[in-house]
Length: 268
Image 1 (cartoon, one colour):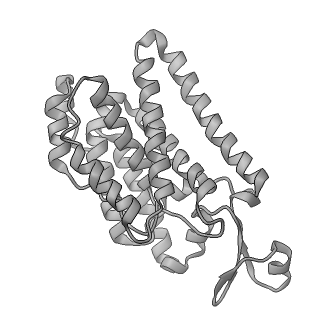
Image 2: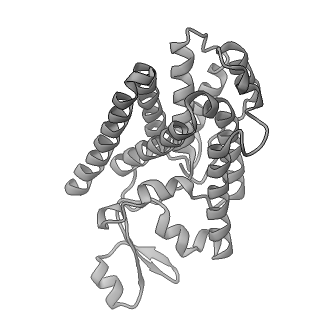
């Protein structure tokens, strides 16, 4: 989740996953059209529409981007940029106040996961989302895939709120995508499959996360950990008779993430 791309670019790994994980025959159609991947393609569509709205309203200087990117601390937007002052001072000076999560802009916890400014950032993230979605959506189901994406994004945002610079803005779907990568890891392990096809992807993305310029390691790590948790819940309560427990556990994890954000807001 930053102004740089997620880096997941390994079609061979996804293909290997298709070969090594037991799956119904209907999965073979997972890459052909909207009816096969409605959630994946819809998420891509939303990300593209948000990028278009930002591009058409000023790109990096768009007020839309400022409004939906995540930051803990609000800031005063001026023609020359912005600076951190109390909201009252900003408004009394005739400038625009852009709120942060601590000011009540809690929507940023999720809207930031659909926000991109750079077309390269968007393109690489959407390619990664498509490759992961083409494998995962048929396995976990449409609704669960959507929930996993959103909760992973929320987990990434929660760590951003706790560990990133309070006045810094973070954008991008990378936290949610790293969460889906975490889901894939858990499914491989639970199926007794070797992680060797995924190791190059994991190592490359670890390098990008911790050594890349302008990368939000908080969003990547938080999203990945969130994906591990939701996948563990999915595999622990997979039987139909355990579905209520699965949804209750996912709901409980979501509440925990929101509570962690709330605690950070109280501390700030």
